[in-house]
Image (cartoon, rainbow over the protein chains, first blue to last red):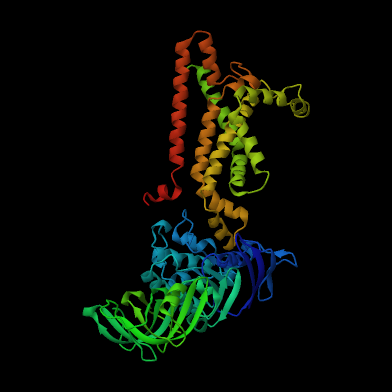
Length: 357
Length: 228
């Protein structure tokens, strides 16, 4: 078990957390600038908290009361920064070897390079790697040092959607094969849903939500989401392909049918469909003559307002959140029970393969 | 080349090299410290290291004479305890070279360490390496080109040293006379053609230094692989 309790004064906010993580993979979720990276750095020993205690099992890494602060090299904590930070003067192989420790507690390089499929890159100069390869090498470098805990800072943020889908399975594999507990900073709903057992939502330096990712991230309710882009995530099943028209039809468990950009996937296979709350239009009357392929009828179930932003939950019956300005809510006269239509462009819907939960 | 001419060239290169080599470790460590620290004493240290660069060399020489003269505390201490004469010997020339080259060395080295992302060092720490190991395996190789550049710059400055040297070491042919001092003397004696010959030699040495620097400062990985 990993215990992190600390307070730390950052540039604009005060970070205050008290967490016990059971893992294996925990996400730190929230908008940027709320202290997620600082928290990772504190655990890695790269930044000193003002007060608190950090423990892995019974081993104290930091304790302000006990005046303990292990240097980073003695913490056995692997850190994979957002931009990989491979050593530019070493080959990929040398990068991977850099953290290897004495044989007794080292993870063999061969096993790591197999798992991450980077064996063919060992001779390469890191500056010539693609973004996805860099991330895999950075992850491999941390693994070879045989850490007791992995800290991943937005491992996929630097990658475009297509690459993400190609790197996620490797993270999955590492989780299953090495069983090293991990703390993953993310503001990507997909990443969290596919990779993590638990999510901790941070906003302005405090924990504002915590729990099973599915429950926490698909049910809007925490104040933190007003500032983060909120993404609706629907479990869907592929029901039809219309490649000539460029769409694939999918269906939610409640029987709601939507059109997403065409992808090759077996009929009947399941996937996640994501729609940003701010990408959805809301109309009181069913509009006509629109190019958008998805017009869904529903009833407003809740309206949450904060800082001029309103989050409207529409039961379709699958709950879908729509982000509006307060002005829009007032002008349309929206209230609970109002019948509305949701308009969603096909290309506003992202789909992720390999979702398992 | 006549014997005393080759002696003169060899002496000049040797004292300049010795001065810079002796200060290199300090220059590298100080440059690294200045690039990484935010402590309050930093600006004081910075100013002190820059001073020899902005002061007239004769003033630097005057201070050195004040320190190392036979009748000054440090000079007397060295002489009485170790039998070392400093002022008006070759040792004073080396010290003058070291002092005038040092600011250029430190400034260049510092700039090259500032180019190294400190987060690379942080990641290396999390991979189990002590600060010293990280310095040797990450910071130093990545700043290598800048260190070479700083070395050459300091060496070139030391090679042409005149003002401080003449103050603290005099202009004693065969003992403390360097190329630039000899050129000065020859012009004063109206022996201009000989002065020009020495000037030409100085230019050749400087060009060779630049060529060596250029070769050394290629990134090791590039030269080893011949691509990338």
